[in-house]
Length: 86
Image 1 (cartoon, rainbow, N blue to C red):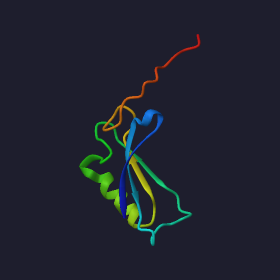
Image 2 (image 1 turned 90 degrees about the horizontal axis):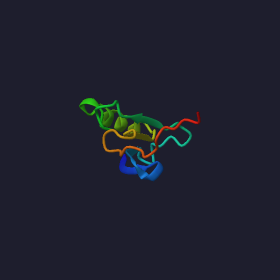
Image 3 (image 1 turned 60 degrees about the horizontal axis):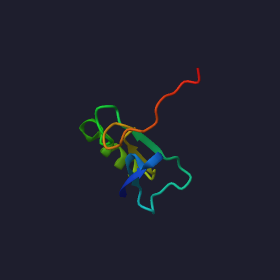
């Protein structure tokens, strides 16, 4: 298994960890798995549960991305403001 920190999204403001399976185990046609933070916790999740889960998923051959939504954890808040056309 290989893990890599990533910055992505508009302005590279979002932060996540990509967990990839060993190439010999990778399910090429399998779906990817997304996990986002639960609010007050960053991408590791409460009691690091997302770390353990992402690694277990990768060990089963799936690619997994756990990430922080905008403004929470390691991700910066977005610069987009809500507007109204009225």
